[in-house]
Amino acid sequence: MTKRIAIFVFLLFSYLTIAQANSQEIAVKDFVQTRVPAEDQETENLSFHAQMTYINQRHNDFNSSYSGANSLLSRFEGSDGRSYSLSGTIFLGARLWKDTELYYNPEMFSGTPFSGSLVGLGGVQNGELQKGSYAPPVYYTARAFARQTFQFGGEREYLESSANQLAGYVDTNRLVISAGKFNTLDFFDANTYSHDPRTQFQNFAIFSMGAYNYAADPKGFTFGVVAEWYKDNWLLKAARLAMPKVPNTFDLDYSLSENYGDQIELTREHNLYEQPGAIRLLYFRANAFMSNYRDSINLGMQTNTTPDILNTRLANQKLWGYGINLEQAISNDVGVFARWSWNTGQTETQTIDISQSLSGGVSIKGTSWGRPEDTIGIGYAISGISASEIDYLQRGGMTAFIGDGNIQYERERIFETFYSMKAYKGVWLSADFQRIENPAFNAARGPIHIFGLRAHIEM
Image (cartoon, rainbow, N blue to C red; front, side, top):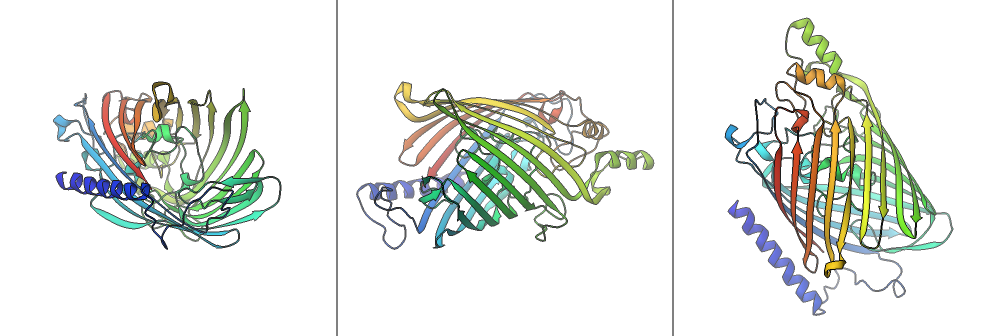
């Protein structure tokens, strides 16, 4: 732990030194394109952005009447109650020619979940930990994709430079095709107030649709094609994305013909009492090599054994669902959000164990107390699983993420609040608290209190 903290402090000091040099107008030529106002330079041809995020979490010594192989352990059961994640990403972008862009994101990650593995919760407490458990750090390509824009006219709007977005003017009526490697949530289930665990809420059930069974390998990335049609204040997205040939493994089906996920999302932006808002409707469907809970239960009854999804996996299993995603600004400093998501819940999950989820919350900027770039977030989620998965767990079954050996079923309830403070140019520090009742949908365990600190750097 001391070594990790030393590395983080060194990187933070290095960043602050660079930022101070930039503030004194020391240019880094031939590396990062100088950014000037849109009226002086309309098109950005090269871009460089970077981020680093460190999250440290502790949980309390919670009640645990019993535990199983996939339980989040209390400290008296052997857990030290500690978890951390450290990620660093470089976002490189290049405009190859007019309306054609290429993006590449090398990434570093190190992290350890509670109890050493990502188990014991429906709504996982740290979205960064989807990347797994790695110490020392691992290095890999997070994203590598091309983007082609087809301009169809209408008014012109300016896109600001950001991570994986080159600055420039585009038509409000346009078609954008992206193909390659990326994260499904880079494109779907966006929300201004709750979408990024590096800067906003950290719990999976709050920063995303809990029941959205999206395509992902064990680090959270996939391969595929996404089409986005922008038409004034409407946005229609559709994608086919690769799922693993075996659930929760790195072997993606690049053919996109046997193990894949399809999704389509419609967004309508609006103004309500002169404040911006949006509603998003999502439909998703997975076709993959997976196990059906009922098949596992039936086999267990026939053989007088504990049901096991590993014994009943078949090709072309189906899972589908939908989600509704709302956001609305109340004022320039206050915004609210809400999500509802549902899936059939008959097959094992490839993301997290949730079949129904309702979440919402509020985000408040600190303008009224003289800190306009600080943010307070307050969120809540209530989630459940299907009847067949409940039966499977009650018979002692295990999924990839949960399984206490039995289950006294209750819906999982998550409260999360955070305060994010801008400490320096490009540096944010946050304190986060989560209370999770009925962890992994089991009333015999918990509640779990999780206290977290987060440091986030952007360049």
